[in-house]
Length: 156
Picture (cartoon, rainbow, N blue to C red):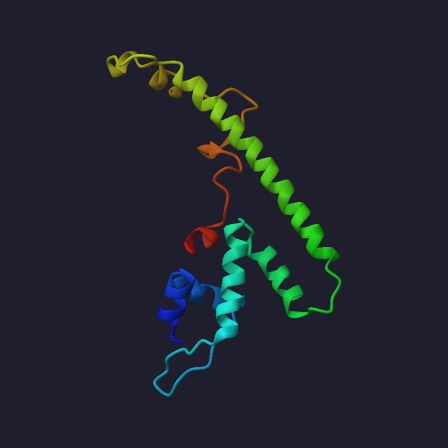
């Protein structure tokens, strides 16, 4: 199948498929005489595996490790368990950060209970104040909540 069909079948943008190839997660397929990539069932299965991992918010490095184990089925999977335990820990920490963000937003929302002129808006006035020391705010957002690398965000 050509890249467009693989993209359609897996719900993966063509650029993301090419990105996974460049990153070494997906083997470059053979090409036709007309220089078209031709993907087979193994590409479909591997891409589906990658997409499933990504849907669980696993980083590309985590996916890479899991693929190494998938490619070596006789290996002991203890490290897979360790990787997943660590990932669960990251998710738990992010949930905690998101709950803190929710509390901050609700507190901010309580600053303005009725529509009034913007000069007297409690939300705008509060946002004009410096954040208190020790908050999780860093770089304009709650640290860790809007995670991801530029490359990770580019593949979406």
